[in-house]
Length: 375
Ligand SMILES: Cc1cc2nc3c(=O)[nH]c(=O)nc-3n(C[C@H](O)[C@H](O)[C@H](O)COP(=O)(O)OP(=O)(O)OC[C@H]3O[C@@H](n4cnc5c(N)ncnc54)[C@H](O)[C@@H]3O)c2cc1C
Image (cartoon, rainbow, N blue to C red; front, side, top):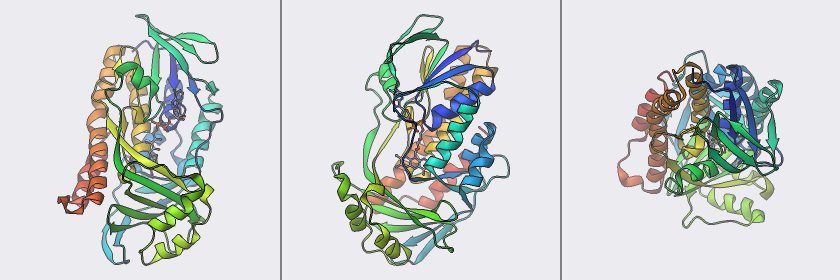
């Protein structure tokens, strides 16, 4: 046993909420600080796969996620003129009888995770972060922006790609870097025949995708090169997305016409980074995007964060001592995360430089084979 009884989690996103539930299940006293005043997320869709559902299932939440989303088996690739290129056959990752893919709204996933935290009675302090953190040998003394202070056996930094906890531990040595691309998203009604994810490849610099989310809704995403990491005025976002969807034939044409509400367009520049193991310094450990931020090209960021949480909870419960638990955790996670971060980055680079010789189906097959291995 790692002798960890009291844990602070910094960050109430996908990984932090999963870690809270996983630790609570194992009898560990846990609390969360989340710097946002309200615990809410953008109304965008995400794509998750069997390994995400397997990990979420360990927390008892997979069935609710499946019921809230739109399960599908594979994805189809077309060119910009709507000619079929290849279809990715279903790959059922993760043990258990889970669908290969699930389209899910981000608010639906958030509600499921938040309910689990609330039902477990886990305290979540909103609008609060740490103002200081110091290790004392047998604990970490933390002061908070709301004036409180407390000592914990372990602190988990689950504060996302722009992690303050990572900077506290490692300075700016492992800042994620801008990849040269950004992703645009918008929700639209789902036609009956849109039952699998459909990608339209070959526009210089990017890919467009249509992803079913619920019986009624799907979303369009467009990943493309955005030179110089530009910022866009909020009220220009619908025009900017429509501009980027020009030139496509087939279903994207109709979707383009429907993009008319700038307030509902979500644009994010893409950053990628990977921190080498170990992922802890003493009693402070990192999890999720804070240690491995990947671009969305493989739809794996959420899965990796939940898998981290499950493995960390397991190690804290089962390893001989805390040092072994944290070492084992990073060792078990590193290669899997590295393949996703590097593979996703390679696909984005390929979109921007299509003559680089990358065999995209072979890359997917290789990474999916790794992700199909037990955690
Ligand atoms: C546009 C976009 C599309 C994506 N699409 C997909 C997809 O389709 N499929 C997929 O699997 N993944 C996708 N991802 C990635 C996925 O969202 C992330 O990998 C995942 O959210 C990582 O979880 P996390 O808990 O590490 O970080 P986050 O979910 O980002 O959570 C971090 C939390 O920490 C809080 N925080 C930050 N700093 C502090 C602080 N100092 N103190 C307290 N709280 C703090 C933040 O407010 C936030 O709530 C996408 C990401 C983006 C940006």
